[in-house]
Image 1 (cartoon, rainbow, N blue to C red):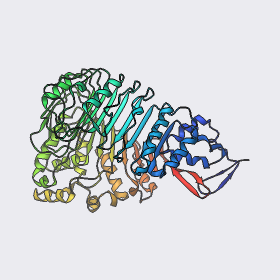
Image 2 (image 1 turned 135 degrees about the vertical axis):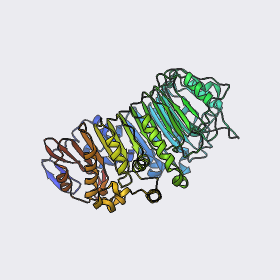
Image 3 (image 1 turned 90 degrees about the vertical axis):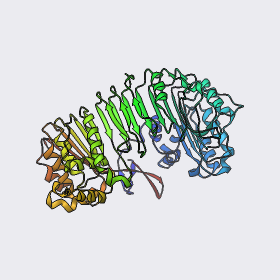
Image 4 (image 1 turned 45 degrees about the horizontal axis):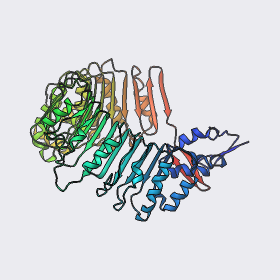
Length: 559
């Protein structure tokens, strides 16, 4: 009869160890999900059955700073018996005495025909990748992070990565000659990500002209430092297979943007991050472009106009309220919006904020799925308190990413009342506000407005507190507000709360809400999922974390 030792040191007589009875290939696949190979090796202490399972795992992840010495790494590699390695991750962030061994570790991975190789050597200034690294038929994906003083592809090296489909380069020096070698040595490259400091002694950098022509690349991500130009006036673009493009911190003019769009006939997904020089984003001629994401810092100036009549999804995150104007998004079906602003301008900008937010909502009134951030909802609340007219929405799924306090209640109420087709409502109660509630309160007082009238009198003090002080009545009040102001079409509500909300008994909450059995109410936490359905209350406890013994007196917990 077998015995199994559990995390609480209890021996269970006759219990069957179903996991250990699985074939090696399945166990090895499971071990690949552990953070590093160190954790995989620790399972060898479980029993004789597990002693050698890790020796043929298809994925290796070595953090030399965790393993401390090169000897321990070398010993680990000596015990590895698999003929082929699917992925190999190597991180070395210090201990320069380990540098002489890095070539050996890279050669080990290549000798096992590694397909996915990740090298994080950012803080090893003196190190240079060996010449043999640039010649491999097995590489399918490469992630390389070097220090800002390390050159990728030195002059004496050539590149032959004939099977490579995905390449990511970060922080290294990439000259025009090096880029030419990479592009010519990767004939089937489909996914290219560049985040680097170029080899120049001055600020303005231009990607070489030949880099704007490729028939194989389908996904391209370029991150440059400030003031670096992309697509200068003398260049043309021909990325005929490109479907997904991400540009970050690039100096990008309207002319450059037009060249990119005309040279990418099958482009479907465009992301622009901190490309603040653009004053017009005109996507009217890009018929296949369906997704636009714009991430911006806090900038003040002439707003950028977005003309995108064919896109279906828009993500507009953290722009200054005056940074963007939605001119044409007629085909939009899904959007995510959040705004930010200088705190010093808050008192004077609130009126303009309300106008801008409502203009955005008006342009989104045909969208069926909306996600709104906490700042956005706060400004919606101010507009509601001030009696500003609201557009009607056709949204079917609404997500509100906001903390719960009295300053968002009016906005939530109005959004629900103006969403007659709403079927699903989700509230994330975890994010923080950028607008201090004290400033909102001062503004309301200056305008002669009273936010308290929008909350039940007995809960005024409670709503003024942030989520960390929330109690049973806060959650109940929010859910009742949602139920009261939602239409009959609603079939599911989700309130996401973290552990600090579980200071009350779950039974008290479900008992209070159980009479609303015409909808499904789901309350999530890190431990418990509760559902109220038509056929009665159901409760399911999330499976607790399991424990794996590392030795006689040591236990390691994994999710």
